[in-house]
Length: 109
Image: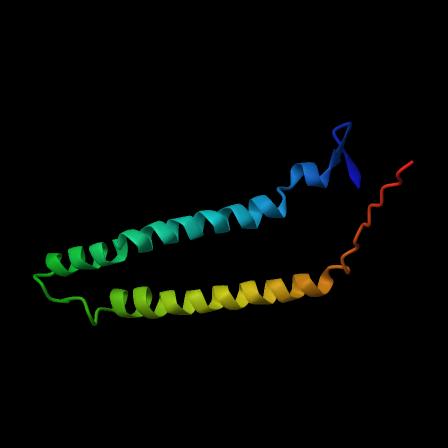
């Protein structure tokens, strides 16, 4: 439905980004980034670098930043994000009307 804005008719779909831009593109970028990081083993490179900086031992193993924030906090954030995405998916599936199939028939003269 177009709205009048400063003398012009503006559709909200022209103003607001589509779901493709809001969700699918960032999700695709994150999947590609994860695949590259996982495929190249960058997590092990980073952990090995930190390990060597600490004198070949985990000096910060029980530090509040590494144990509480980076380990437990990241795990909790991941679980909340997954639960939120699953809930969003279920709600969207329930709110969508049933799919309408178009049957195209050709009439041969």
